[in-house]
Length: 155
Image (tube, rainbow, N blue to C red; front, side, top):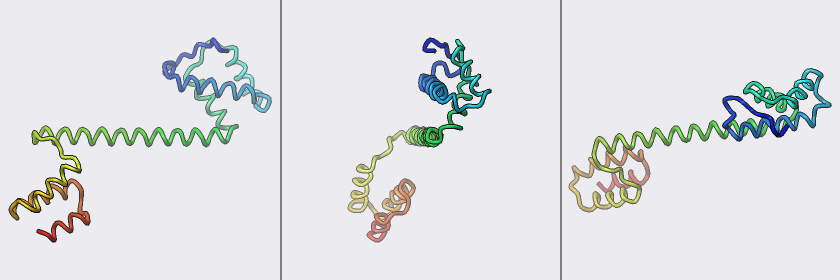
């Protein structure tokens, strides 16, 4: 069994291959409780030299059917992966938007500390008309906050 060649689109994916082997060994130890068709398929996997993607899926499906704790764990892992992918997509989109803003203005975007320093300067030094220009930029970036409301009162 340890020298089985696992061929599929997932063959390069070590986590998927490891999970399929874990599913197989769990089903192998649980085979007395499987129906005849499932038991014969598990035995066929034991003697097989090659597993395909459909085999990976079948093993996971059967293990999830009989092992409720594993089923809950896999559901959580899948949700975690989906959330991680959504976060990465948002980060990529934000980075692309930031790059486009920097390319259009030719200036790097300010971080929070730099923005506060600009605001202190705006409130204390600039003319009232320039304060409103910077106020619009701040509101666009941070939204309407209590801090922004206090600055508006000072203007």
